[in-house]
Image 1 (cartoon, rainbow, N blue to C red):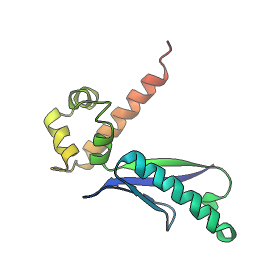
Image 2: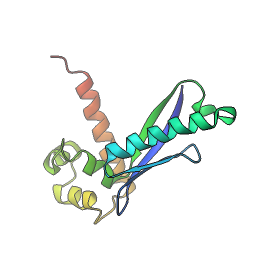
Image 3: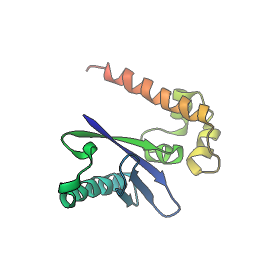
Image 4: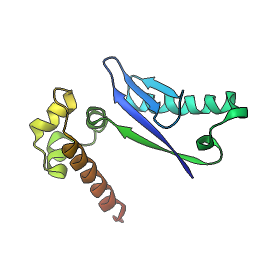
Length: 131
């Protein structure tokens, strides 16, 4: 199965989305959800109007993998995770998390990796839960 890598970034006015590994597929929205919907619509339209020269990645089944910049990710999950919970999950101080979420500071590669690994670990733990 092919993977379409979609990057979601916070810009000054909105969220933008683009297919990192496919040229010409873009989307945007006021929220991350709207940007995701927009990029999915763009993929659908691309497939509809380029049937004769469809890239291999769009032929057959494919999955979408989203990649966020740190600011967008922290703001997208703000309703789920507080800065305190991000601190507990990642070990990064709340004040630093807030700096990343506001765009005041950009995390180093090691900090981004730490956030990503911590969220993946949490996801794995949650997948093992049964009620």
